[in-house]
Image 1: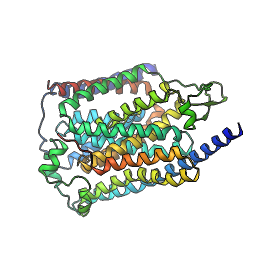
Image 2 (image 1 turned 30 degrees about the vertical axis):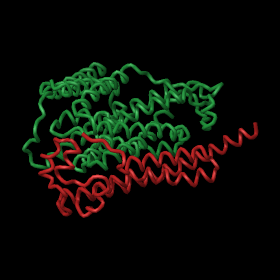
Image 3 (image 1 turned 180 degrees about the vertical axis):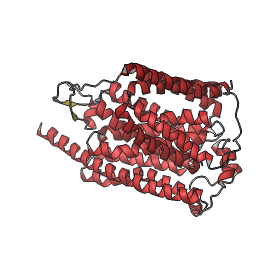
Image 4 (image 1 turned 60 degrees about the vertical axis):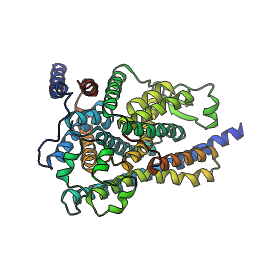
Length: 145
Length: 317
């Protein structure tokens, strides 16, 4: 009974730690991500940082699927866009990446927490979730029209 | 007298919404080319539409992306569904990330439950995103129509359970994962110890919910909350908060797929995200002065029309 109570208390402590990590990372992610997105978008619209595809042309090109759009307009797929950060549209993507990255970083920060609390089941779940993110972002699994 | 006036206003808004969507229904078979507008009308128009959607979504108690994908793909038919779904995911994700921290700090998110179900949902979301990008647009349109109509049915028929029941015999998986929680029963005010139930069924359902979120860019709060509340026995308040948490995780996985395949276009994503956020702020202020039931009915009607329209477009009618 005492062991069960201790276990419950350990679970609650870990939950509190996880809550803190997620609350701070999500707050930071939204603030920094939106700041980058909005700044980059203004630079994009005002043509201070010219886009890869001019805005006026882009509107006429988006009636095809994403795969055709990227191949016919030579738009970088995967992570190749990182090389084109000097363009307004691509820099806006970096802001979006900050939003997505905040979740990834929050999960990464859970690893030492789970280790400290010796919660190996949740450690395994966190690692698998990180692997799922890497799989999604890695571009190894493919599908196309 | 006040009720009659509100009803009249509700009907007027309903017919306005119907009137706005009817031309779209009539021209369902056509795939128009982009109109010859000055470029700035596009982001400005998108911002205006999404601000309105943000207001409606908050007042109807649903996520913005649920309205975003069907309505924007209806209003801007020259925009391929891939880009609308990508933006829809970002709309859902930003909403979840904005609401998340407050709910997490208040201890309403059951993270020990959210972590395994988020894993199932994000695996489903990846499969959904890949399917959505691989299947022909008309197939996705038909499926989207069916899902939107199903969603409207869920909104009409499903009534959430507000009470908390103490769990006498928690299942072994719930014990293994340490899912014990304490909640205050809103009816009696007593503290009740509860465990989520039917975990395996819940996990399977969340894979499906994630698949839909990834495939259609809809977000999935409309499905998350009933599954958590009615199937897994999670008290309503915790179900809503936990739904935001897992939306953020599942949508991140799907959005990574869309991003690395060039389906996230800042010109569509940024005005949409900002519009929905502004609309949500305005909506939450108006909410105090209106009858949410009337708004909810209007939104359900709009969803039914949008679902029918997606079906018709999918069948090329």
